[in-house]
Image 1 (tube, rainbow, N blue to C red):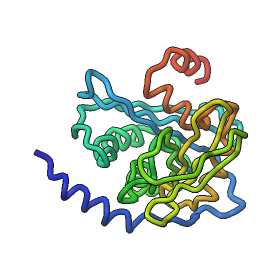
Image 2 (tube, one colour):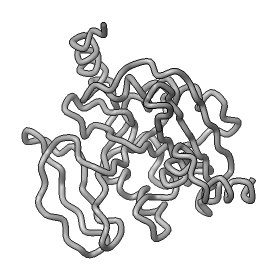
Image 3 (cartoon, rainbow, N blue to C red):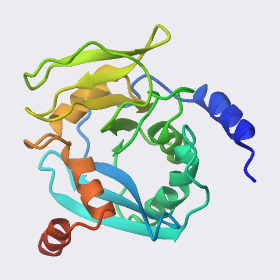
Image 4 (cartoon, rainbow, N blue to C red):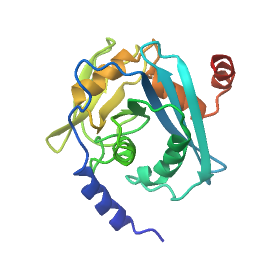
Length: 225
């Protein structure tokens, strides 16, 4: 039996440690930007984490690592980061390259207790992170315009917790939030810098494809590295 009350309290306490301002200098140009994502296999009993490291600004794949391990926690709404982070940490430990910034497929502070997987992972590895989520977990926002680049603030209990951003026409918007050691303006700025015409920015597009074990990404990876 898992002590969900204790885990929620841990989220509340660790959320206070999340740094919501930039630590990278304004003129800093990263060498590597990574994407991180987690999937599940065998009816959720196996967690599969993928981290894709891309050269910047070319956004070409430089390295990827995958970690598979027994799932440590069942699916509990609002506590997903505890289920996902052990495999992400394992994949991180395999990397030969160290990215300057990581985009995580999931929420950062756009979470009921302001501590989604992007914040949890960023705090653990002490690297700037951005939450790039495909769906909303909490908060409300006005309708987002259909023009690419349209955005609306995501508000929860009077606090802005992210931006809802139209990355591609005829696609649902993305939910961008602070993970750790970035502010919201930098978060959306870096996401914009990493777009190549798809719904997702290249770092999480690659991580998503690798974590999901899609055939296209398997073939491309063999040619890229």
